[in-house]
Length: 252
Image (cartoon, rainbow, N blue to C red; front, side):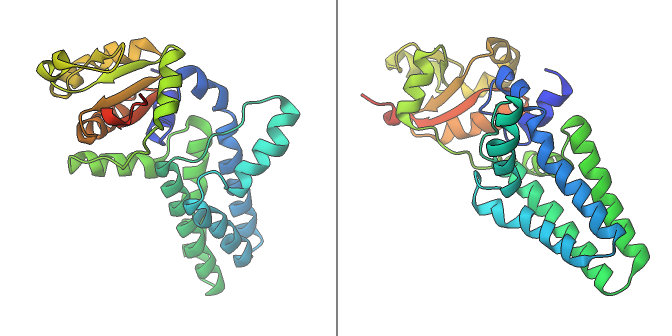
């Protein structure tokens, strides 16, 4: 997997396949570019209210994954004009990163209000550099630090469960049902067409899953192991992950 794709997965786009990630790699640059230019303008014109407005754009949409104003401008104006793929809802790591950027804009705005020139330019400059890196490579420092911290604690961010009907549709279209239970449990019964990748040996089979390049629908008995598997695989840069949770959620 190339570095840019791995960085997009790190930002939380683990549900998308490599082909889907490739189709949005330029669109994902739209929002951070506008924010970067806006932050630079607010700082250069010494206008704290521009910085506060950008902060609100980053923080408020945290609770509305599919309603970031700039993403909506891209999806409903820019993408149709250039024939590009629309952006999916913002995953949790990217929303946290937006909040982090918003917090830096608030700090810079407060420093401007208080006339602290050097500190304001240092804060604004740091944000500009971080946004420039995101635009150039898709590497998000906030998402990276979140992943490192969670990995150190042996945890992962909560994942949204895929609907049972959607999971069946994905499987019918070529997706692979990944059963992460123990082999003894798998032999007693599994979902139709499922393949067994036990959680205990999953890290040894990451390359095998990466090579499939199709949607991967993870499940276990009750959902706990599937959640852990999702976290482990996403940290390893595996694309196309969908967490079904417990096998009872599969439609009958």
